[in-house]
Image (tube, rainbow, N blue to C red; front, side, top):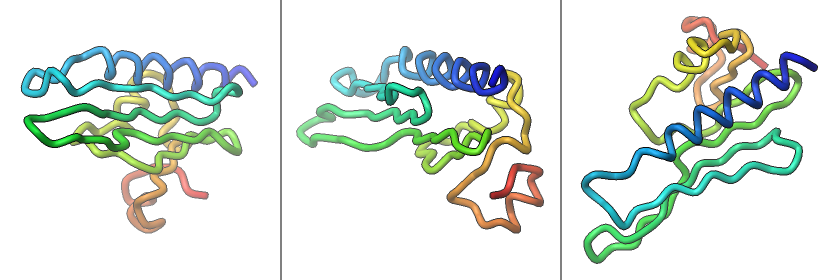
Length: 112
């Protein structure tokens, strides 16, 4: 249980930190961090107007199940898995759901 509390805290602080940095080239674009009550699902969205186009989309989507952090979406160029490892998450406890099992094993990330 302590491990899960630690992982939840790391995910929350990492996403809050990421969301606190404003878009320099799109001041009307905002982040929205959504966390379910049990703190097992974390979604960071961005939305707002860029020029005359409304933008809305997922930046990151995480789910904690079976004592692993599962990453379903990363729409950035940030190596978020490596960042979580640097903050204390075991690399084998991170499952990159959008990457094939073979590639996960090559990178040293967790599998199902």
